[in-house]
Figure 1 (cartoon, rainbow, N blue to C red):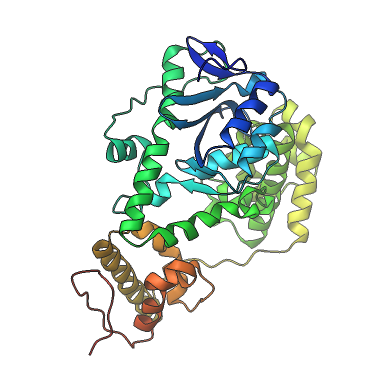
Figure 2: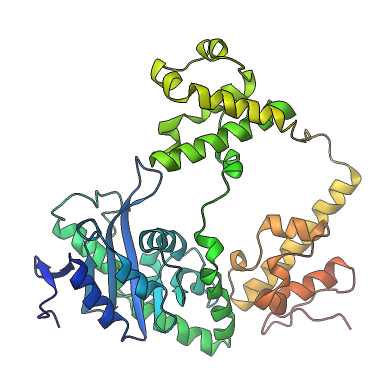
Length: 396
């Protein structure tokens, strides 16, 4: 297999470093029922991760390393990514898929996330790759290159070993997970859960107006409504600027600087000059900051409420939330499903407060527990576990 003319070998390893070789590799990959994918990247000084390597394989002895910095056009990889006939196996898939989608301008399809699938078969939905490979095939993986420079060439033997092992055993883990899901009659649930990765929304840029949620600085909790509007506006400006420059948010302006702008709400260059900005920052961003402050002021104050002593209704909702959490935890424990797959605490809180447009009330979650949660919260169900399959049953 390694004798193919389109494969360049580094230290006896198959490395793909031309667009033509990549196209040939993808042609071969598309002949497989399932292939494993992984990425290695550097993400320290850029807004977007810098892709350093893509690993692809479908057998323990059929693993390829794609030297992405050496290949200008990765469109061939996109042919595999969006192909609906070949399963792409990834572990903890979201970030890798977002990086690959951006690099190839392709929307992923037919994805299998081994980490998420593990939560359906008695493992945790946050299992590490090492733990899952140990469970699935009995191999212990060494993980010593997690903070390496994947853009520096040549790559060391340790880097290459690490990269290959990230996909080498994934096909076997995938087969084990599929078998376990079938034995538990949960293959359809797993398949429906994997449809989440087909949603184009997952690969869209986030709304800059929500970037305020990332800001962590002292005193933010004491800002009034007008100051909160300004903070939202300047945070959105920073998000757009960081994307444009492909620099980290902090390299544009740190969180403390944004919080200070929101607190002081400067109206002029003279106001900015009194703040702790460098001459370079003022020259580069001063006008933009004043425009963002004006935008925040024009939006009006954001509504907010300060925490007070809990009311009787607050305590009642808190109690109902505990009951809902207990139901989820109990049923999941006896059914060998990770509760993290079923519903988050915030989702259950929304459910208790009357919201019905929630994931726990759709798809396999509705079938598994959603209806029972509604009946419990409506007072129509006394939960008892039958001790065998963990399903809640109506009280006699």
